[in-house]
Image (cartoon, rainbow, N blue to C red; front, top):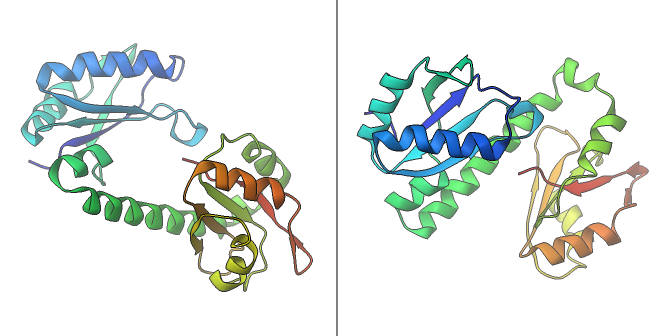
Length: 214
């Protein structure tokens, strides 16, 4: 038994997210209780989903029997997820362990982002086109900073963002990437800070402040 969460790819991207969630839930519930179905809708993760079971043996059976099953005309490619979903972690542990799991997942995501930022093919992308897309992200309690001075530290950013109430955490992506995450206790506090610092300039660097992707 390898885990309770399955990672599914090669899904038909022409269908809507809700249609896929309902279809996957119906199909995989035949193997046992399903805790959660998560269908990704951002461009990079389109055609991919995660299905979390209450019991690992149900996930095993579902993977073995549904591998290659043609869903809406395309055979599903099913693997065990490398990282358990939040709902599985909470099922097996307390809320403190869940928070630890979330923090570790965020750190791993930030590490991948830093590695991606250093790749030549990523650096060739239009900065303006990326920034314009990020400007339309929905509000949440975490801000994403781009184009910071490479030597920026947590202390440097704390002096700026602590001027706004309910600052919770600041994480600078290592490697001189000019990237950082600023987290507030709640969404309204993050919205206030973003609106106030939308034209932030640090040492001649025009910092781009958006909401973090979820």
